[in-house]
Picture 1 (cartoon, rainbow, N blue to C red):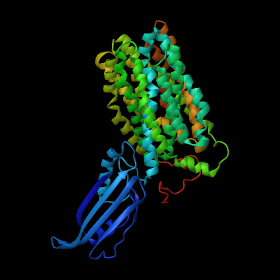
Picture 2: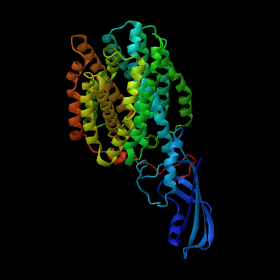
Picture 3: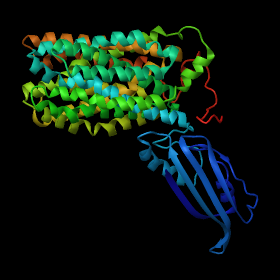
Picture 4: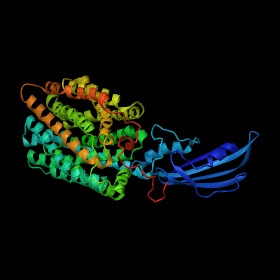
Length: 525
């Protein structure tokens, strides 16, 4: 429980302002009015709508004279707890500065939106960040460990590329299921995908061949892909319009933390030839967390509004936007999948890195990426997303290809900058798949986009595998694919619409308007 106390000398006008219910970071109501304001008094305020799990502001004042000026001694004590599981104490530090601020004018803070955010929204976004970490860990696991598994099973580089391509087939299963989120809600499938991803990953630890590992990871990774799609979808439906890019950037960082956790455990692969299997057992630890999220996560407000509206069938889907987003995702995936997945192979086979060396390398180059991603999200909300995504994608793609020609300092620089810019572009591009489609179709569209973009990933891996099977090196193979992301970088600012700061209902007029916020205790705003 956080607590902040203010003690100041104020004028009568200032006192009147401070005794009004707050309307900036939350909406308050007066609980214990006192009619003796002229001399002294006490008042208590509680939250009507806001981001707090518990909240109380108590004020005391009395007439005083200071420096020959008559005024009031004013004391205010606010006790609060932000409705953010796990990360809440860190946010409480920032929230404490806002609570102590005597300027109660509603305004934008760099870390908090203009709008009053409900505890419902605050809780769901916090829990989605945890699910994003789980999905990211499982999503990158096979790519980071397959070189070690292939060594145990005696498989070639081409077999590895083909196996990585085959693991993408699991998205077919999730595509057949994910549309149900437009009917039964986001939460049930979020939990189902998270549990399925964890279970099949653990089963993969007991694989007896590369084929068995590929099959289990096709299912587990497919569930992880569906999970990450629904995380972005559910978050977009809850995030205030003035901070969509910034909060999606934060969720991207949480995903990067989950993906980075694979690197923390990757040195286990050096224990012996079978050590990579230990990394596949880590998701056992996710099961209790998933169960806790199942008990506490609410459904998104926009799905509940659409469900109450009883709109029949799916919402309309603009084929113009659908085809454009498919092209963007597919083209980026054809290049991005081999560029990312074959990095460990290059480090290990060409440069002689061990599992521990690879882990240290990746941790060092990706750690500063968080600041770049946050800055890109912050700028995208204020300056527009398209130029941020375009520039980041173009430069990052070129450096990703150059990476495979480098050693020494050049290796570290190209890897770091390409990772930073790729991280900056991803949340900006990802948001479009939910913003441009109505609530009753978002999950269905997301499923198809996953299938088609993962198909692009598989195609890119197969093409790269065939190209490097001959006399070409990895960098030469990637040069054949590099024009695709560069074409996307040109298309984004020319063809995609501006969406920053615009409510989803304005972008999708057929969606029902959101009702007034209702906090969990049932008190309407």
